[in-house]
Amino acid sequence: MFHYRAYELNIASELKLPGLVAVESGLGVCDVEISAVDDIPDLADAAVRESWWQVSPSAFRMEVEDVAIYQVENGRRMLVQSHPVADPAEVRLFLLGSAMGALLYQRGLFPLHGSAVETPWGAMVFVGPSGIGKSTLAAHFHRAGYRLIADDVCAITRDASGRLQVLPAFPHLRLKTDAIGRLYGEFASQPPSHFDVDKLVLPLGEGHASTPVPLGAVHALKDADSGDPSLTPLRGFESIQSLADNLYRPHFLQGMQTRGDVLRLAGEIAQAAEVVQLSRRRDATQLDSLVLWLEQEWTKGRSRPGIPTQRR
Image (cartoon, rainbow, N blue to C red; front, top):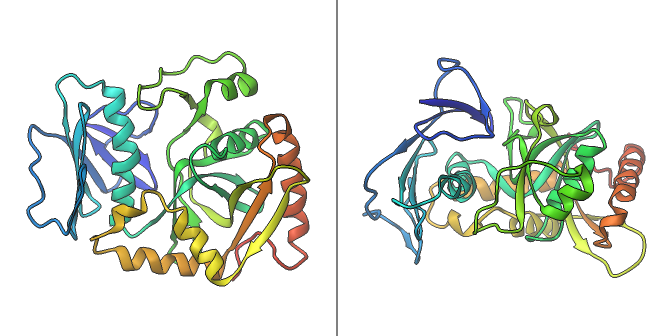
């Protein structure tokens, strides 16, 4: 068994998962077990059946052609039936992406499709559709000295005192080749799979947060044709809708017994923390300036309405 830690979970895995935070065996209770199996049948009690995934109240099954079949059970167990000719990197890609997202849903967490960085103002989360620049913006913050909390699947929950927090995920960024070259120069990284041909994995090491970070704000990225960047607070239904729109694989929630808990958490996040729309030009040459501008706005926000920090 290999032992890892992610999302504040102790993970015991029969599959080797390079790039994850490895821990010694026996350190705490095992929260999640990943097993390699020879056969994963259809879910007999599936409430939802689609072409490549199924959901029952306590289980999720997903089949990726020529890669693997995955089953996630009760937020505690992940089964993997790898295709005989599958590239192990591709098996891991879907295990740590879609299958992990389903597990987070089963545990009642709120996984956003976004990236998050640790700042003096709390965890700042950037969400939006694929390709809008979430990971690239997080990478510019990382180069400016901030630690990454999560990239792609960003999980929010409450701690024992009820405070919202963002959980540390995997210690790497997935970036396009040109972004890595622009930010870090030539970098040796594991090769991309044919499912994600334009991105490489950039390990961060010490540049990754190791403990949960209180939620500061959620920023929904929006492209602007021209003009200066702007932050527009979203209120009421707008903020809840923005959070729901940016859930990670929201269709997986259909038929899960935790669906109500997850959706209620959207309302709690909208009420307790700032959700803002960040409009900016999608211009790679302006990202360092955008980082500086956001730092100034977050600093000013402490003393004016619409502050991008968690309300108590």
